[in-house]
Image 1: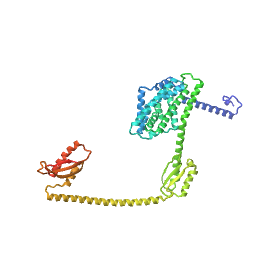
Image 2: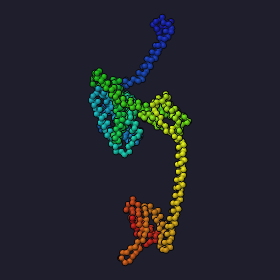
Image 3: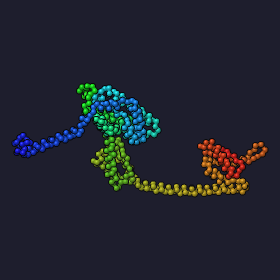
Length: 492
């Protein structure tokens, strides 16, 4: 027993008891070492710069000068990004937005009992919110290309996930802020994750379009982000034991904690209900897809055309089949919905089947054949009409040539009018119609002259200044073609 005298005070212990005691001691030492390692790994209190942190937060609170212009530019960048459905542009607006400063100021002043900083932060944040809403409202109200898209719709129905993003993002931001030498990449990352500017611009879009559901939903998302970033700031500063600005007794500190808790829970409640609704709807849609895959598409006797995803209130699943569905098959499918444990969320759903009481395939086949015959008949009619049109055009052309040849045989000065009008239309596409006649005229009421006149109907879109030039050119060409010494152009 001499070899165990150094590990135990009681020399009467057995060998097994001594070994168990040593194992226990070793395990205790291992857990102690792990504990020390974890404390050293996650403890960031020794790396905290209290004075620099407070100065940095207070420096970002004021809203004037360059900060005001940066906010306005960020609003327009975010609005354009939302309007264009561009994620990259929206991210750019998040990075330049100065909204984070007053929000951190609220959390800090609440944690340190700094009433003056709290008032200053609240006033500046209120002004920023008002200016952002006004600027985004103006943009979406006057910009002609404004419509719903994924970037806008993604910010009108916040849920518990948005709460968690804001809270953990705020924690990451404050830990980075309190570290000696601020980690800029972390601050940028939190700015992107929490997305303060896009919800405000989406709220402005809702106001501009008169859609108060969008406005309230987007504003609620902004409130979530604001409160939980401020709450995270409050918790980190309490954890790091930042010095109080003014002494607050135990009752006041407890009251602050109670207020923070109540506000946080109050903001979370609607988000939780939204998340539950989204979760239930997603669960129902997944089970419907599973039902379609396992019970419908796997059945070789059924040919599914499509189906409609129902909303939670209807509780009706509409299936459209290409073939006839018997009553027995319908009952089997309905029983699967009601009794199969894989579809627990679909127990109260009722099936609505199209094609179960008609022979859809026969009807479609018959209709197809009828339409095919009608189409062929229509093609034959059209072909016959086209042939008649060609024959009529040939007859008209032949008659025109006969008339012109007859006139030419009687009068050597007759003109081939059909050829000339075709050439005139090719040369001057703006001509709507053309007519030619010979008018009897007398200037001294004794001698009578025959005057050739071409009456032209021009396209109404041509300006008068251009018509004068075209008419001079047309007259010269017509005179040459008709071999006339004189020709008057009359505008109709």
